[in-house]
Length: 199
Image 1: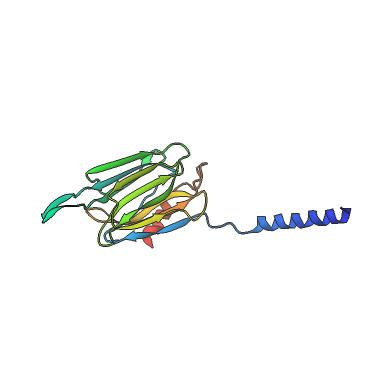
Image 2 (image 1 turned 90 degrees about the vertical axis):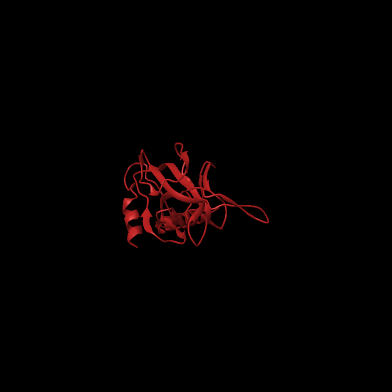
């Protein structure tokens, strides 16, 4: 290959790489819109650092009735939850129901999917939190309408859960995804949580 062609090729490759560096960086945050009936008090979790633990409470209103044959009906729903950021637990959003599910996350483990089912007339019926290590926490009863939240950008993780609750349980839920700066700067979710409650 002549010297001129090599120089031209190097110039083209250099300009291409410089152009790639100049591309705007995609917004590192995304939001999975809330599902559910949405009555009651708004909430948004907040804290410093990565989510390291989860507690979810469910209320079991199972009952039996007879009408020509034996039948079973279940009205389980998510009554409350709590997230731990670093070493500090957030407030309980909703209330502590009859059954509590707990998951402690390992180092470098993050929640990368939030799914479940909701009843459009009242509560979140079923909640599943899935981590990047394939572990899950599930609470409630899998009935009604399905939802599935996950980050838009690869490498993001759950930063905030937001929605509404009333005296009995969680009536709507949404998920905020982003990066965690493990060096300590820009690690707080409080500002985003406050913006969520205002909007």
